[in-house]
Image (tube, rainbow, N blue to C red):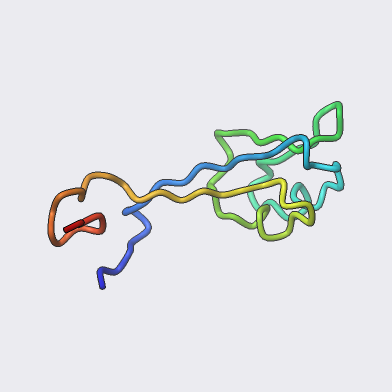
Length: 86
């Protein structure tokens, strides 16, 4: 099994505003202060500050935050790569 390195994937942070109740837990736990509550008390992110660490996803009681990791396609087709398929 190939070992996955941090540089082998990318991630996207999604916030489902309709699920967010505005509790502010994600804002309190964000180590980079990348999250804030907007005028509707919905969680929002500052893209430049977010490192996609996933702490907000872990603590969100409403499952309104998702961190989706994807493997980079640079290794596709290479039998030694992470995305090797036969």
